[in-house]
Length: 217
Image (tube, rainbow, N blue to C red):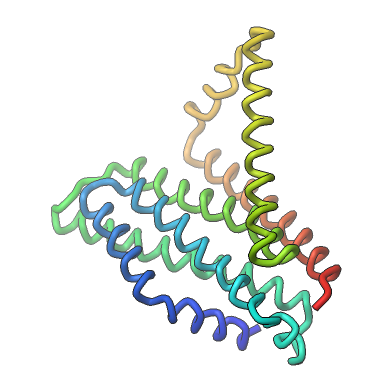
């Protein structure tokens, strides 16, 4: 797995100009006092960088070449998720340290709840993007994977709209459910998010491994 991680690190490093631009934008947002936007923006872009490594591997029959080495399909799938987790941790730590430095320097003032919600939102956004996207990229490849994923997201959006309209039509009050989140404490929110992230990644890894077993190179 170490060799795969080094390969992907070099692939991401080859896009250093793009990475630097994204880092500058995220840092500027945090410096300007908008930590939520900065962390969410970083979550989306850096998750896409991790996913792009699958696209690079898939180009010019690259997958077939990779598996000529003593690498199992299970190891390949797990490495992509480990890369995603390492990227999530690196961005979260960097963003938190930057926000702390800015607060100490007196450039911006963040409430603890605001700081906490930004970090939690970052973890959830990154987890949703990686767990939802990687199985499609691994199963269908770069081009077809994007089309299938876009179709799935459109279907989810349509289904969510239909459900909400149906609830309104039958006069079902969902405010009591949403109020539970507003009154939830820090402990409950952390436990809930951790459980949700673990479940999402667990399902995603199983689906990705099953998809990789069925792929032909």
